[in-house]
Image (cartoon, rainbow, N blue to C red; front, side, top):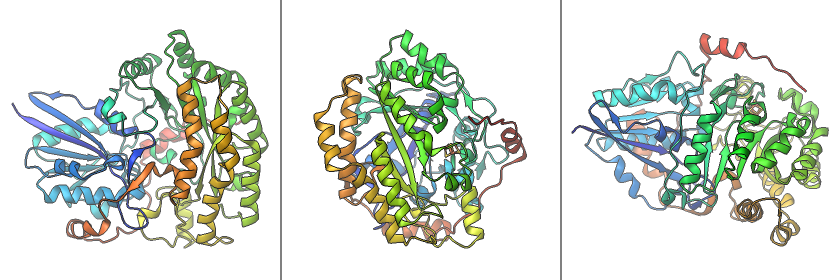
Length: 509
Ligand code: SF4
């Protein structure tokens, strides 16, 4: 019987010392890999499809590279590739082609939002649209023996999300992570227009959702497979119209599966919704507060954020028994060393439960990237650094060293010794013991990462070095003709996608 082997691989990235970033234990699994796996049938016509999945961040040895050396019919799909992972994805693609894998495709935020035309027709294909729209065609073309150079050129987003019941990863795979969770997309898209954000370029401004029954079926499948936590990856869970119905259903069916979600700051006006989140088992609500300066937020087109309401969010999540996670950005154009210190002090005082902090990064494909490039502000040429933890552009008031130091200081200030001690001595009895354990581990994990000189969101515990970019530069040059791919232009939206965005009506509270 004919067979196609499909390797779904989430590439890691090259760290600042050039080594491939790997961890003995990841913090939490990637969402795209199980999603694409769930979309892959076991048979197509008379061809058996055998699927393997790899999250490169948690590969502690290089045995998985054996899968990329094969003269059997194999499709290597490098998925969820962001700009800072793009070189690594290209290198893995070239490595596979060199070792007789015939079909390689790269998909994810970078190819969807950035011009990759300088790399087309060199053996690796590029996916420019949501997987649902193009994955079946890619699989069929791989079976036929020939991939197209580009998929999804004319339309980035499908109008409606296709319902998909996700297959949970194996318990063996989950053992690689501290938080063994499954990421689920009940909805996709965000109506706002923050100029630094790539989400609206990747998923569009129209919030599209999956029906509640499908999400419940995924949750039950996850529960039965032993998954202990869920992350609703939708960017504005509070803007997802069916969220209350889903939460009520979770309560009615007593699923008892603790979860994290992401909400926008307008949730400060939705006390009933926060109460419902608490009852349904939410243990952490992620909120992009970004800045405490309203003028800065207005200039970044994040008009929906009102810093004076941030305290309400903290008060409400604590009232209903769970934690907030405030995500912050330092290095907006008007920031100074003093304003960053004031920002840290206020967030520490607000005490949302958890924080993260990034350096403002003009992410390729975003409006801000285009603006900064037009003003000739972007000095960094290596895509590996565009991960919001490295300085990349000329800030008027802060040097690259100051930005890096301030980012790490943010973590040390918030996750103080006092907070670490408190996290060990205080038990939140309104959370499940598993959720409470995560809340206790999180401060330690953050301090440990910062102590190792790693950004806590880099992905895991105990970094290990196995291979280095220098080992891949020859294949990169051979297949693509570049040592560093030039910074790309942003991809314009097609007429169809522009029209879809144009239908969005934004109501601000
Ligand atoms: S609210 Fe969040 S997801 Fe939406 S555009 Fe702004 S930063 Fe992006």
